[in-house]
Amino acid sequence: MRGVRDALGVPLLVLMATFAGFVGLARDAGIGLGHTLYMVAFIWALPAQVVLVAQISAGASLLAATVAVTLSSVRLMPMVVALLPELRTPQTRRRSLYLVAGYIAVTSWVIGMTRAREIPRRSRIAWFAGVETTLVAANLGVATAVHLLAAGLPPLVSGLLAFLMPTYFLASLWTTARENASRLALAAGLTVGPAVHWWSAEFDLIAAGLAGGVAGFLSLRAARP
Image (tube, rainbow, N blue to C red):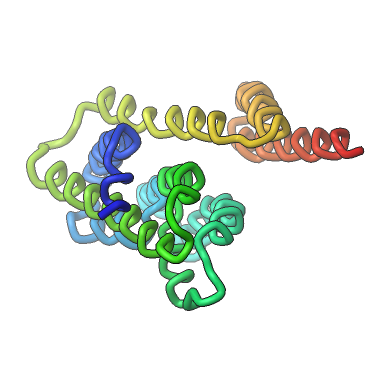
């Protein structure tokens, strides 16, 4: 029950609003309720779902869509590596780690990193599973309601709802950063990304990621005695 309670709050409301916007995009792309719910339940990370919808709308091949979704999800691997040591014990079953790792995304990761140490270590896997289950169940409900009841959200509303999530992600990553190098990496990415987008929108995210990674790495190197 502690995991359910910790999942409830402003982050969940923001996530639900963003998923409502995503469902509007999925409807506009001609994706049915069943496929939409499948994406919410099993892909889970919202950016990967948006990428998949974009690939479907563009008529991309299965291989191209698979590669695009995989690349968009690689960013979650460092989050998994950082969080799992906070959750596991020597007695933790490997399949339990695999299960919770598959549903780590930014919202659950932020909750895990900020609150896991308040939970007795032997109970952390069960607690975090409660967090993830609550997040997924709530957004499955939102996806179902929006898909069935809405004739289609106005494009402006869908865009505003979708914009809530990156704004929340940025604020969460900034506040949970444990060293200045992380904040420097965010600042570098925010500076370089828009500049490269003006020059070539195809490479803005790659450039932002490279700039942030290099800036954070050099900052950590410089801080070492």
